[in-house]
Image 1 (cartoon, rainbow over the protein chains, first blue to last red):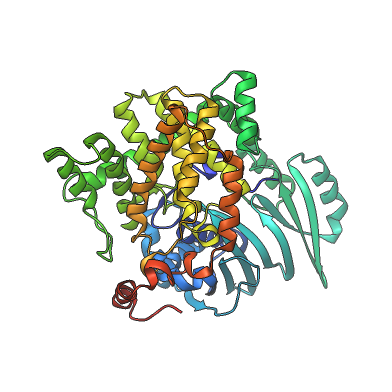
Image 2 (image 1 turned 60 degrees about the vertical axis):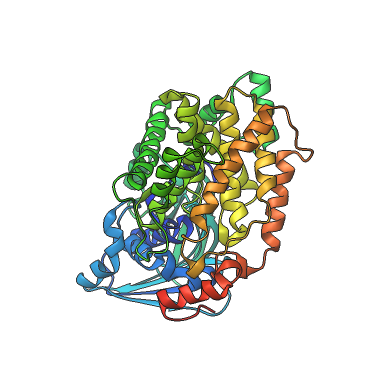
Amino acid sequence: MEQYQSIFDIIGPIMIGPSSSHTAGALAIGHVAYQLFNGQPEKVTIHYYESFAATHRGHGTDFAIVAGILGLGYSDFKIVSSVKLAQERGIHVNFIEESQASPIGHPNTAFIEMTGSQKKLMVGGCSVGGGKIEIRQLLYHNCQIKINGFLPFALCPLDPQYLKVQQQVWKKIGLIRQIKIFHQQSAAVAVLFLSRNPTAAESQHLQQILPQITILQG
Amino acid sequence: MYKTIKDLVTSCQQQQKPIWQIVLAAEQEQTEASETEIWQQLAKRYEVMQAAIRRATTGDGVYSPTGLTGGEALKIKKYRASQPTLAGGALLQAVENAVATNEVNAAMGKICATPTAGSSGTVPGVLFYLKDRLQLKQDQRLKFLLTSGAIGLIIANNAMIAGATGGCQAEVGSASAMAAAAAVEAAGGTAEQSSQAVAIAMSNLLGLVCDPIAGLVEIPCVKRNAIGAVNAIIAADLALAGCISKIPADEVIGAMADIGRKLPREVRETGLGGLAGTPTGQQIQIKIFGKKLD
C-alpha cells in the first residue's frame, strides 16, 4: 500500500509554520499519544533523535509535539504557547536530545512517554515528510508493539472473554486490510491496519461495536 | 491509484482527459469523499494560500520571531512596481508570491504545506502568478492544485518529500516539479508536456541540499522557493515549446531518490553542514540559541 494516499497529503495540511515534518508531523505524533492516553497525564518525557534532536528548537518541534499531546489542531494559534499551557494544567514536560541513532531507523524520530493515573504509554513515531507520520513502536495497555505502521490504523485491547466476538466483527469490516496481535503476559492488543480513513459514520459504527477501539486517522 | 508519471499520462491519453480530471476520480475512489467535498477542501487551501501572500505583501509585511527573515516580499513588490526589472515585473510576481508565503511560514503564520511547509511558497508562487497572467478562473485555479497534488503524490510514494530524508531537492525540487506540470496544464498543454515539465524542473534542482541556518526554516528556505517557482515556470515554458527531457520523469524522480539516500546527514536538515556550517551561519546559530549544535 502507498504511504501517501490522498492529494491532500500533498496539498496540505493547513498549518502553523515553520516545518511540516518538524512541526505538523511532530504535532501528529503528539496527537496519537493524546488519543491513546485518553486523559490528562502527570508527566510527559519526549526523546528526540537525529534531525529532531538537532533542530527541534529552531523548528518549534517542542510546542508542536506538546500541542498534539494537548489535543490542539494544526492551525490552532494556541499551539505556539502549548508548553506554557501544559505547565498551567500541571503537566510536567521534559525534552531529551538523544545522541544515538533513532531506534526506529528514521532521522525525524520522537519517542513520547506519558504517565499518570496509574497508566503508562509510550509512542515511538517518525515524521516522514509533508506532515505524514509513521508509528513504529508502542507501549500500550502494557503491551510492547512493534509495527511498520503508517496511519490510518486502529488499536484495540483484546478481551479474552469476547475474543471470538471481536474477531467475528473484524472479519466483517472491509476497511481492515491486515490484523496483527501482540501479546505480553496477560495483556494483548490488536492492531487493525485500515485501507483508508473511515468516514464519520464508519468510525461511529466501529466505536459502537468495539467500545475500546482507538482509531488513528491518517 | 496511479503509481508513476507514465501511468498517469497513459490514463490521460487513453481516456482523453486532463490530469486534474483523472486525479479527481482517483481521489474520490481512494477516500470516498464526494466531488463537492474535494472542491471545498481545495478552495479552503486556496484561501489560506491567498491570505498568506496578502499578509506578507501589505502593511509593514511580516517578520519571523528571530528577525532572520521578513519584509522582503514587500521590497520585491515595491521594486517591481517602481522600475523596469531584469526578469520582468510579471515573472517577479511569482518570486514575490513565493517569498511572501515562506515569510509567513517562517513567522509561524498559517500556510498550506505544498508538499511541505519549507517548500510552501513554490506552488502558490506559480499559481497566483498564472492567475493574473492567464486570467485563470476559480475552477481552473483549483484544478491547478489537483494536478500539482497528483505529481507530488507520485514523487512522495516513489522517492521522498522531506528535507531530512532527501535534502531540499525533495522539498523545493518536488514543489517545483508539481507546479511545472500544473502550469503546463493551465496553459493548455498536454499531459505528456506536463510530464516533460516535471522531468525538466526536477532535473534542474537535483542535488540541492537542506542546510538551514540554526535549523530554522528561514535561510535559505525563503529564497529557495523563489527559485523553485521561477524554475517551474521556465520548465513549463520549455515543455510547451516542445523541448524534451531525454531522461523520462519517472527516472528523474528515481535519480532524486537515489541522490537523497546518498546525501550526508550534515546536509539533510540537521543544521550542521552547507550554509548552516559556514562561519556566519554558525555565528547566527550561537546568537539565537547560545550554543553550537553537534
